[in-house]
Image 1 (cartoon, rainbow, N blue to C red):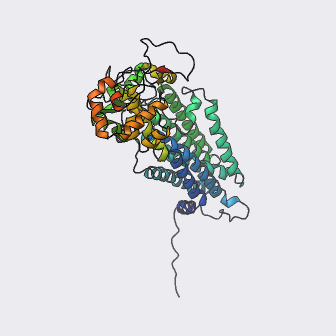
Image 2: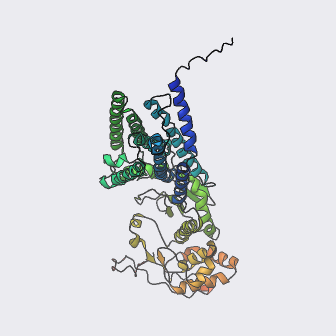
Image 3: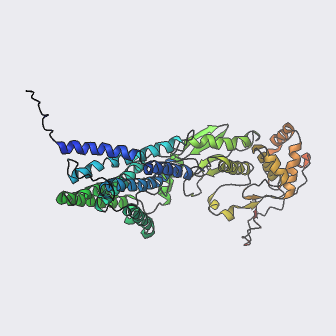
Length: 496
């Protein structure tokens, strides 16, 4: 007689089944075309939105956060399909699985960390696709965590809706409803001090460079929303626990949103602006006799500015003034780094590829050439673009500026000969361009030596110092006091 020992009963069979179900669901979603399609689309949008400009941490976080909403929509659909699989027509029922419905719901929550990891992977891939460029500005880890929490919340919402409403059409309808709600938040908002404004998942970019943002409180709000969504999964089976957790999450979200509103400055006055972007906080470097001053954490762009400025500086005589390059935030009170000195300003945007990078370099090269020749002086009047425009027609320093610019730009000589070279806000006549073209035909050393010997006279707006070099243009009469604007933008004042 043979005796066969039966295996001992398995304890905690429900928990084992729950873990097995979680692993199976994680494997299934990792093979889902919805997940991978959402990741590819999210990465493509994040890369496209930031393709034209050099990245900053603020702009990258904004692009990555907005693209994570697309991924959240994809994993919402994937979560709904996974949660409703056992109750769709023609699907195999999971009622025979040795575990409760509550534990089946917990097993489905394996999709939440998978969605969060997918968001983090897209964010990292977006950073790597920027190489060799790298974001500048102040790094804020709380903002980047949005790319993890938002897709995780989308997956959790899909699971909850799938357990409550398993019909196949409910998933897409839920996604549409979420899109409508999110799109209405900016419309219903009344400004940065509005609660509705801070409910949007992706925090808005700082409207003032360097201003502190309550992004930590915003992350608390997002985590509270995620907790409330997950807790609603227990509504049918553990209602008391679900209600308690949802209420606690709602209170936490309200407190966090209130802290965001209170911590966001309603007005940036000149004193605060000066403290954020004034001379005391700038990081300055000197290269080739030129001083470059960048905002905090923006010094990585100084090599880009040097590429635009140094081609002009190479042809300036030793006696010429070398304007400072200064970076400004969103406002300018007209304060100079060095009173009486010349400087040009740049912003927190710079082209990254192709014609966008070329345009940024060209604008700075033009600005530096006109500032070095005294045609443009920065001051409080630069608030008004029209008031800062002037005419340098006939002035010999205008011809020198064109000569400098024609050599500094890769196609400067060709553009000058074709009449397509401009001096930005400074107007010049075709006769000035012809005179500058004639200077280019002379030996460079001859012109450079003449400029070095007569630079002070050339800087005189009424002078005719270039006459020995064959320049015959005559500058207009320079008024002692600027006349009131005539109202016609086609006739700017004379550069003085």
